[in-house]
Length: 90
Image (cartoon, rainbow, N blue to C red; front, top):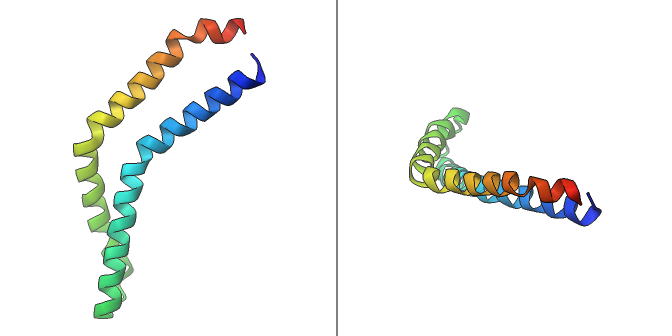
């Protein structure tokens, strides 16, 4: 196993992880910013106010983007397992 192969595998793993996590993180970020603006405008200082909307948004995103996320994970895993003999030989 050469350094180039290890770097490529690490790059692919990080890229796949980022692509799968991005919709959830962006949804939570946007929801948090909107709730924070609402709290600043209304001067409501309740720390627990952000949790329920974030949980709802993440659940909705998982329902909508879940199949895409699972397909992307499956494609990455199948590709990794199918090419394992090539990785071991190098």
